[in-house]
Length: 171
Image 1 (cartoon, helix red, strand yellow):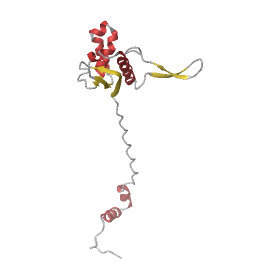
Image 2 (cartoon, rainbow, N blue to C red):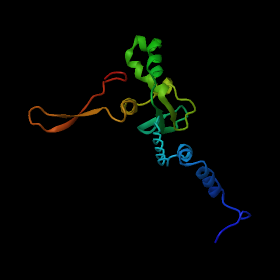
Image 3 (cartoon, rainbow, N blue to C red):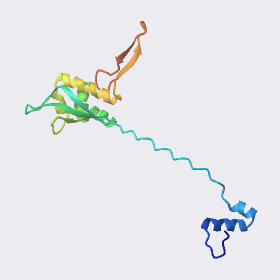
Image 4 (spheres, rainbow, N blue to C red):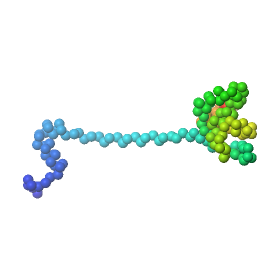
């Protein structure tokens, strides 16, 4: 069927007619080459969330002045500032063993229903709880552990050794 001049044509047919009427050289110059499909954008890498707070349970528990036992708490990762502040403390300069007490008072953010955890609270803890918290501090600030796998030079059996020092801040 032949269409007359009054018949409507599609926009595509009109554009084709314009390119075709200009001649083959003009059509080649204005026609866009077939573009390769754009590569799909790479998915954004999954954001890793850094865990900065860790729950713990004291072996014995802290008994406050009212006689209430507190065993569950939260410790946060230490910052460089946390490790430097105790070095300015007079008590630490006089007795370096006090370093861990001051440092734990800074990084323990919650202990049962104790309103404000500070070095005075840590001072009143049982020795077994203090030792537990010192080890827990080492573990969370050393990315989860302070042990390394080694092999015995005599029997060649693998085993783990503890790398942590005797006090916080030592290795």
